[in-house]
Amino acid sequence: QVQVMESGGGLVQPGGSLRLSCAASGRFDIINAMAWYRQAPGKERESVAVIISGGNTEYADSVKGRFTISRDYAKNTVYLQMNSLRPEDAAVYYCNVNLSLRGANFRYWGQGTQVTVSS
Image 1: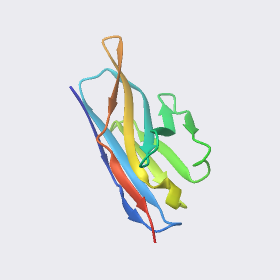
Image 2: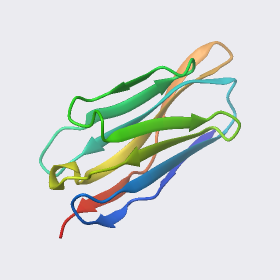
Image 3: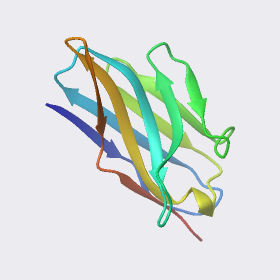
Image 4: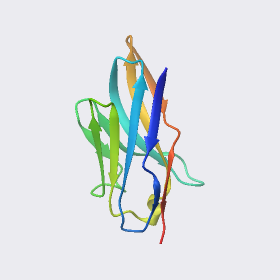
């Protein structure tokens, strides 16, 4: 069994910063990629940022230059540093972990953490 736990959401004023964390634990051989998604009310879930095992990263155009994804390989943890937050960044942020166990790939989701951007 694999557990994915997010933390770090909250209320922030426009222009402020937050850092989200997501830790994966349990039985697996290797983590292939870790990613952040978000879903605002009435909208579909969208990809925000991803970091693959080699360290390469990709970002949604809407967050480029403001958000930074990073990973602590020893702790199986991924972070999302969010700067210059805008009201449109408000959403539930979900962590997604792509991992392998005995040659098979699996994806797990966290429970989500709320980010509210408001003055």
